[in-house]
Image (cartoon, rainbow, N blue to C red):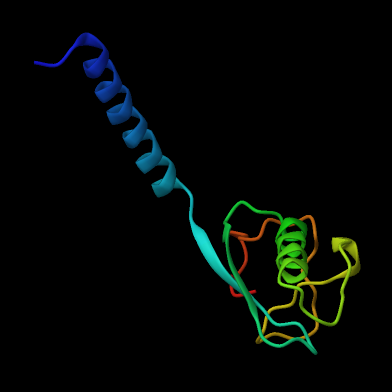
Length: 108
C-alpha cells in the first residue's frame, strides 16, 4: 500500500506529464541548417517557431564558435543576415519571427 507522500508524488508527476505534452503540441520546432561560406560544413540546430531571427543568428554564431570553426566570425548578430537557400538576395529582418504565418515561404 502506498503512503500519502508517494500518492502525492505520483499525482504531481502525472499532472506535470500532461502539461509537458500540451506544451510540446502547441510549439512547433524547425530544423535549421546554416551554411557559412568558407566553413567545413553546415551548422544544424532546432529552433522554436516563435524565435526571432536575430536569436536564430545568435544561436548559430554561438554554435559555430563552440565548435571552433574557421573563419572566426564574431558574436554580433546585427552584422549578419539570414537568407533563404533558394531565394534571391532579400535578407530577413532581424526583428521578424522565425516562422511568419503570413509568409508564403518558411524555408530559411
